[in-house]
Length: 90
Image 1 (tube, helix red, strand yellow):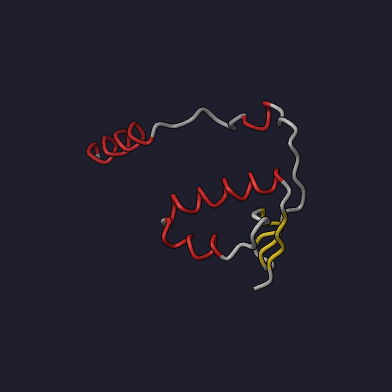
Image 2: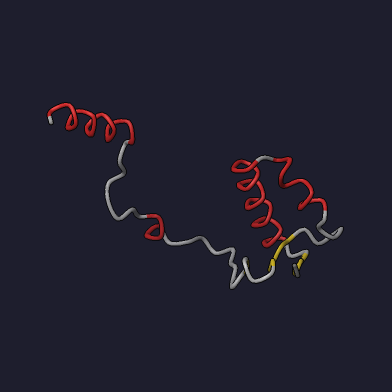
């Protein structure tokens, strides 16, 4: 698989965050070999085959509206209690 790396600090920061997320999902041992294969001095990943391609990146702060939720957040515990209550009524 072909990969494109960079030493750009912003891309390195993004890659570090992406790898930390990956480690939390599938375990550090599963990511270690991949991380160790990065070329020295180029720790930012711009492309990995056709699966992951950085189209653009910016250090500008995103607008607050980018984080607005389409609906009020749901508490999963309360939702499950409500569903269980409905099932018990049937």
